[in-house]
Amino acid sequence: MHRVRPIIFLVALLAVSGPGLTAQKERLGSLDFPNSGTAAAQVDFRQGVLLLHSFEYADAAEAFRRAQATDPDFALAYWGEAMTYNHPIWAEQDREAALGVLARYAGTPPTEREAMYLRALDALYGGDGSKAERDRAYMLAMRRLHEAHPDDREARAFYALSILGLTNGVRDFANYMRAASVAQPLFLENPHHPGAAHYLIHSFDDPIHAPLGLPAARAYGQAVPDAGHAQHMTSHIFLAMGMWQDVIRANVNATRVADMDRARRGSTTPNRCGHYPYWLHYGYLMTERFEEATRIMDMCQANQSDPDRDDRGYYVSTRARQVLDTGDWSGTERWRQDLSDAPWAAPGYEFVDAFAAIKRGDVAPAVATLERWKGMEEDARREIMALELRAMVALEQGSGEETVTLLRAAVELEESLPLEFGPPASLKPPHELLGEVLLAMDRPGEAVEAFQGSLALTPLRTPSLRGLAAAARGAGRVELAADTERQIQAVVR
Image 1 (cartoon, helix red, strand yellow):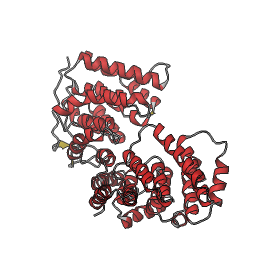
Image 2 (spheres, rainbow, N blue to C red; image 1 turned 180 degrees about the vertical axis):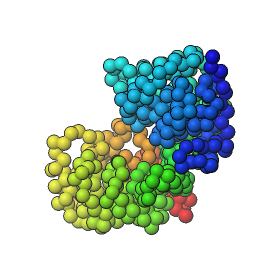
Image 3 (cartoon, one colour; image 1 turned 30 degrees about the horizontal axis):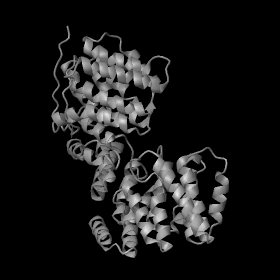
Image 4 (cartoon, rainbow, N blue to C red; image 1 turned 90 degrees about the vertical axis):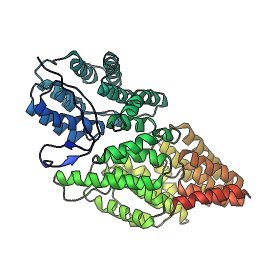
């Protein structure tokens, strides 16, 4: 007969076991997850669950495997490792690896509640349905578990995550609010629960809802300082609210923790061209700390000699932000890279080259790029880039009204797309470019409206603030200009 043991995990007192971590203490949050595993396996299991909530999947899997080695009959230790192969927010799943883990468990769950956790994974990974169908079956299984055991806090947390997983990477406010309604009571009960805070941040991760996620961001950053993803995730809320100093601080912390993890795994060089450096770079640009931003760009360039997975995409995005947000039109030559191994990243790279060339008075690269893009698979973001290039070519050729018409079409397309998280998904925000063009054409009143549209999507974005201040002055809107200038002074300090 297995006795269910309560787990009460204190935020500052998690003793970490395992290779390379002996005698360390990590701060990963707090949770209460009763289970039937042996006492000797609890520390590793606790660590695995906490890391799982913060999407530190590789470290979580190691912790769960240690728990299995200590207690080979520990059902939830196998459940936990199998869970590390499902990344619902990123629309990723390694089904075969997860099924392999579950096949290693030869026992029978000692309680009906633990059996329900494993049956939920049968829904997630088993059967012949599509990923979307299995995601929905899993969500329904987690809902049944939550309803059958309403006091099980982990069932509530993972049920919230299963709702977020239904979107398959596509932003859906209705699902997000459903997930938030499930996670919020757990967060109010335990603000240091890493899953509750984390999943609330994902639920409120856009400029409209971000203020609702600020308490979770503050709590998550404080409670989980030893998970790089946790530190970075707080900046999703900060960026959506234009809190640039907090964006910088969060991603400095995230990069530091990630470097420590890389060193523990045997890497001798830090990664300076990934997700966290990209967001840090953007924070530096928005505060006009251009020297720090350039330092990251240079390291990102150097990193391309031995890139990590996804580095090419982050390189293209970082380079775009560096050139477009500083107006350094010669920077395309300083930061040049062969992308023949990453053709999917080429459009953004080519757009920046063409845009910068137009700004230097040469439209030929833009014309050639537009010709090359003809017949390519339809893509809304590339269509926005194409409209912007066509508009800028028209402007150089003296067709001002055609320029405005094309940019208004780009704005309309932008507004038809789901709200994004993070730095602008359109490399040059079309509202902002329209505002700059209208201001140059001495139409400041219309430019004010365009810059305000940009700031509605990207709050306190400094280039748009500077454009709005200039347009408001030109339109005689003295109070708006003064208020905007005060906002700039608060951001750039």
